Length: 341
Image (cartoon, rainbow, N blue to C red; front, side):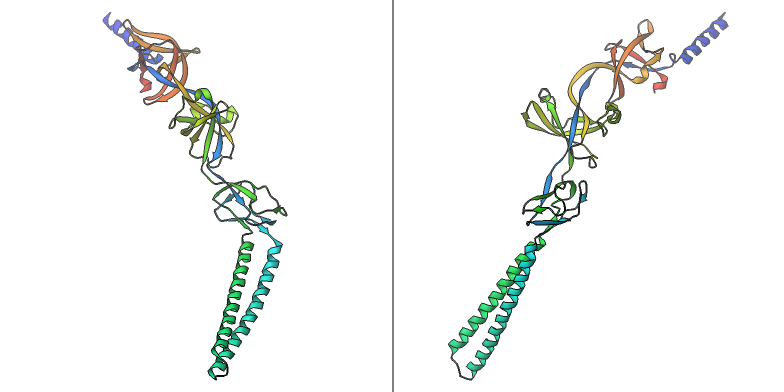
């Protein structure tokens, strides 16, 4: 009889091991945990700074070297404005300089002649002083004319529209042949680092703080592209603005790797708006049979199988956890199968 009893016990143990309930490595004590409540909102991509590239002179657009979306470097020429009057002013300035240079040569010749006559005692010293004055006046007139020409040449060179900063061109509101005035906008360039701007309902103003972690969905507005919370990547609330406008509070979120997004592109963001207390267990403790989820718990009378209703899965410091909506309570000892090690 003892041998039959031993064989029976071995058979029962084998059945338990085959069913997955017999191999228990340890117990997990159910405790209440705080789970953050996440709200899905849309964030809009913004640039820290958007600077305009402006025309420095008035004239006609003769060249446009960029289009919307072009990447530019600071100081890079992106367009050219031509004022035909400046070419005529340069010709006039050159002619004026030639005229004054001729007068300067005459004054220099007259000065040399006067010095020779003074050395022979033919003329007085006052006549020499007068010739020197005429030479100095002619020399200064040439210098002034050359300075005037340099001003015109500088205005001509300012027809080149330069990118004021490194970044991406957002708009180019001009075309070839457009007539522009000095100071008119030729292009808008997003030069700053990109970030997400959130516009949240006023009721969440006290629930978000600088430094909070938010979750950023993938690019796209449809759920199939944006994904769910489990596939989202983290971001950080960098600034919460102190003013509420039209019932909305504004917050900025820093997210790495959004430099290739479009400015004003929208994407889904999950923000923490509160917490709830729930019980959670490791996912490996749940076994599904015939569409019903079960958990084994240790009781005074031995292991007991109970049906549970699981909720969402989340991460904490000890690994993944599944929220249990009903079926367990705080303090229960859940049996973890050996496969969970």
